[in-house]
Length: 376
Image (cartoon, rainbow, N blue to C red; front, side):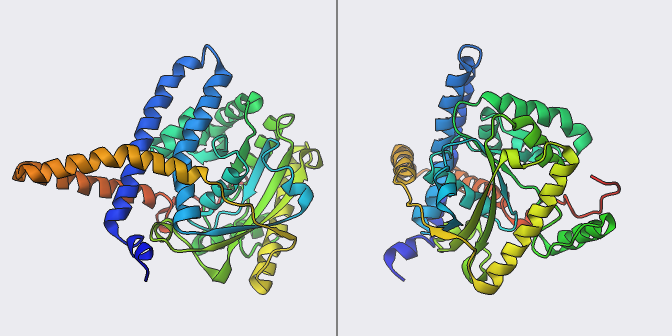
């Protein structure tokens, strides 16, 4: 094991990375709070500023994937589709099987210049998660309780508000509603059987309300739907902790572009279109498991230096005073100060671990663990 590889496994290094992310995130959130005064004066300026503030935070996580762990992401698509990346508003449909599927999506948005303006239909619980939820709030992310009767008006209002967004926007939908587990899959397929729908092997039954509503509300703004099917070579099941320890993974993503005009305007027909899409996604996963590749031409968009430079900036700004303060505490010889400092370090470690826990599959929500009592 080389020295750099050794450093990547050390707890103190992880703690310093977490410190930079948390403190810079709090600073960014405070600046975002101050930008609220811009909203009534110049809404579009407010949005552009917050896109760049969000980039400064999210790109630190992308840096861990691209530069720290060296994870490689390969696209399988066609040249015409790749040429549209970063040049249009789109809806992204991504399978929800892995702890870092969102991070692989973010690295692609970063490489095509839309990380700061990326959007997602997120569960409302995330709104209250420090840094993540707070940053999303200022980005006008659409939150939902995943109960359509309560969500309908909120989701429609949030989506329509994005119709004049000034930056190219990739709007992510996890149509399965929750991460794939064997228990959720079994229950989901029982629901599929009760509804007379074809069973899926690698996905949960898609929830169609969010998709059909997004298509209806963003029609005229969004140009296309990108269907993204993600898998990892070697049957790996990566985690954010693995990334933090410097483990390298190889992600493959099959991307297909569907012009929005090809998607039916009728809600029921659009729902049927989505079910058919997931049957195709299942066939793609079956092909990948058998052959180790997706169909289409391979593309490897190069990583950009901005994520690394952004992290180095924050590390320089924040770690220098931290080291100075820590040295002063131990130099003082005061047991009370030293204990207080160690307690602060312990609290920071606990906080970072809780943030990582948000991504862990076994700590995911119970959503999807019980049968629907009525048709969606």
